[in-house]
Length: 227
Image (cartoon, rainbow, N blue to C red; front, side, top):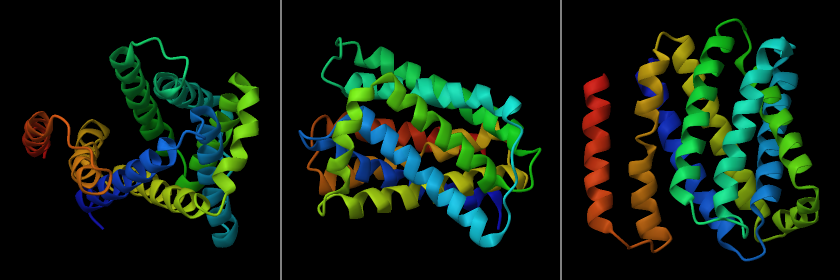
């Protein structure tokens, strides 16, 4: 499968993940740190399950993984900090910081994954360890985890985890199949287009529609210029 098609699949599944995350975080009982912990842990479990079933487990060199773990951890904290009750009205700064850290994490991922045969083995550790770091930062949030195991949320959480796992595995397989990280990452971010459309239809997010349309057009143009 070509790296462009894999990147498109990653963008679509990533967008569906964001939509489900928005739904899960909308409830008043939702806690961003608890969600970050349980979601990262779920994705790690899915990757571990896959490598065990397929017998493709490969223990990664954690000395090369720690940088990515720190970057992912800081990225999640930056985004969640903006959503939590103790935000300090600097959402744009934290959003930018989170995006920058995730970008650095992806670049580091792309470099490390080139050294391993099993992408899933690496991704399992890349999601497991940040989840532990998140809950250590806010131990009291562990009490809020039970909300995500309720009948109304467990299905959405599992589906979000599956979509995110597919998004992660396809984007790094795209890199392994010859795509350049500097091109793949921006193209994958076109997922924002589908996210805006789905949010408009299913979450009734109708504010600043004109600005969103302009943003989508610019995103498409930018992606086309990269290909």
